[in-house]
Image (cartoon, rainbow over all chains, first blue to last red):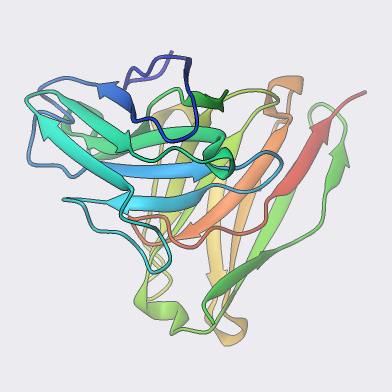
Length: 112
Length: 115
């Protein structure tokens, strides 16, 4: 049971826009703690996708963006491409767990 | 470039211990914490703990306290994760990653616990 809640799966057609939500509580996303997002392509290690307030590591296209409101955060992907098919994880910290790192359960994105 | 290289896969019997290494390249090893995360078969990501390579301070998830030891050898820019009293539930890919933004990740080390 993950501390942060994500839908198990989401799908979209090429070119469409999809969003992946991440719901937490006042002790994690709802606190000043940042939320980070990771992409895990099949059979590979996760990769940092976006950190904090829409900060993208070098090489990550601006088709990927995030937002945060209250105790939830969202990852939006526009202009969906086949190569975006992957698992996506949100991550934050939790003050009720002494600042421990917490993850969402992951969302499998399928490009139809 | 900045990257982390982990040790190879391991097969262990229940009750045994495993030690995974994570060697850092391309940056000052003592300048960034090393985090450890594991992923069970078909499962999500689970944070295990972190170590500050500069002073050796550690913080581990409550679930693993008493079973996990994180150490480092600054002379070879390498961090270690040791997990004891293994059970089949510890079968997973173990990852190291740099800093609180977990970037980059090592390639992962598969640990199989089986009798």
